[in-house]
Image (cartoon, rainbow, N blue to C red):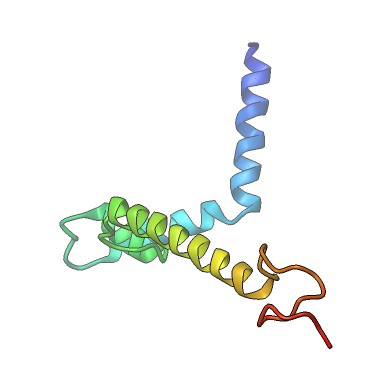
Length: 102
């Protein structure tokens, strides 16, 4: 890759960051960290909180909970389908009591 191509790639990336507000957001968070009177023990957590991200989150627990909830949704959707669709054993022209219409 030529020197000019690398420079163009860097410039395109810089424009992308600037266009999407990343440079401003990072500048603000770094200034906030710099101006903090008592420096936090975990600068990463400070940055996450400053940018609005969750703090200490157990990702694995959330993934497990998400999987469980997806299974529950599938179960409930199946139940809805059972209740809203005619049963497979019902024959057309026969009432629920199993008697032919009069």
